[in-house]
Amino acid sequence: MKFNGEKIAKYSLMLVAFSALASLLLIAVFILKEGVPFMFKMGLRDFLFSSNWNPQAGKFGIYPMIVASLYVTFGAMIIGAPLGVAGAIFLNEFVPKPVMRVIKPMIELLAGIPSVVFGFLGVMVLAPIIRSTMGGPGLSVLAAAVILGIMVLPTVISISTDAIAAVPNSYREGALALGATRWQSVHMVIIKAARSGIIASIILAMGRALGETMAVIMVAGNTVKIPHAVTDPVRTLTANIALEMANATGLAREALFATGVVLFVVIMILNAIALSAIKSRVHKK
Amino acid sequence: MRVPPKITQAVAVTILGGATFLTVAILVFIIGFVLSKGLPGVNAEFLLSAPKDLGRTGGIFVTIVGSVLLPLIAVAIALPLGVGTAVYLSEYTRETQFTRALRFGTDCLAGIPSIIFGLFGFIFFVMMLKMGWCLLSGGLTLAIMVLPTIIRTSEEAIRAVPNAYREVSFSLGATRWETVLKVVLPNALPGIVTGVMLAIGRSIGETAAVIFTAGSSLRMPSSMFDSVRTMSVHFYILATEGISDEKAYATAAVLILAVLLVNLAAYGMMHRFISRRAR
Image (cartoon, rainbow over all chains, first blue to last red; front, side, top):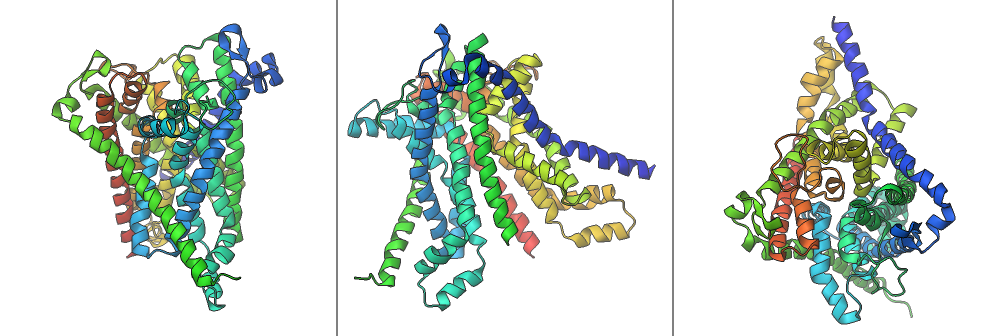
């Protein structure tokens, strides 16, 4: 009897262990199944590289959205990556441990603030500032980039911090013993040793920024147009899905799933790169 | 002329410190701004009465119910799956190609943006399984979304249980499953609860995945197959449809407090867990 119970436990646990992988596959299959046939029906070129998005007229070019997502994501990285990496270095190397133990969880709390709240602050605080100082409607590439740049800070900081903390102390001691100042040891030794982890944190943050939806809908302005200035309003891929989902049927709905496919594939590639960067660091140790 | 290293260092530290200060300042500003604008509108009546006129007046009681029920359903589904996966990975196998595939799946799932979960939940649960916009569709979608969090924290917690505990249990004649149930899981419990708290926090704040699967009905749900509106969805609708900025701020204040409290509880739990282990 006991023997059987053990067997049952083992095999049920094995089955349960498939849940995450199975969910991932299920999601991939459904998004691809709904979206890919549409891409080929429309022609990949007309779908990816046409600027004509007009679902009522049967035109589904998502090029402006692709450009918008790229601009907004890179803008967010320009703001979030240096700020986050600087924070991670400072907290690890120049701040006493007890202070770090207070500040790091505080910054991680930033990750818990719902994205709709970030979006709302973008609308109420940031957009008016941009409107009055730089012109344009305020809701813009710049507003979205700043909000996303802030939103990815916890990702960049916490993963970079782990990477920097994993650099063996002997590296620091070696550099200091050779007469380097703390800063020299940081930028000549520690950053180099922690490089792959820092890069991984930035790539993961890119995935976050690219996939963020609600905050972007609220602050980016949502006009389907290729932007010519940072103060122009744009619609990202994610915003396109969320905005049109409610009343899309038939072909228009398939178009949204096809948009989802583009997003899904790009984010999976980014994550795979980041994960392998993190893994290679673990193996080196 | 070469700049003395001491001066370069002073400049670098100032810049790095400034960046860190800026990050903390932004955090304090966001929380402070929302609370100062929103808290004056929060009182017992706001929390406990139903929204009237689409939320223009009245309270947010229904949406609080939604924000409590939906994460609980999600966790009720994800917890057994997540802990089961963690137990399997840490107690029943060694590292093989197979477990690496499972881990890779978990890591990838964690990176999927919430709008994709929303799309999937909509096409699969709402349309294909004909469940409609409801608590269960939303709960299942959120369950998949928080599964990686629960797997990771549970696995860490289980691995942190000292091997001596298992060895003693085996030496007393207990089987592997008995050891898991009576020795490993009770000792890993605080860590597992931390994961659950983080999952609940994430679910409360989630909007994109919820709005397409649980809907946005303002009626009180009476079964798993009724649509609900959570606080974050309600806040999003109030803010974007220009219904009421005042109510939006008040809802945001309650939302932020709820998420912060849940996350703080999670950190507190984790801290106690770690310090107990360190002894």
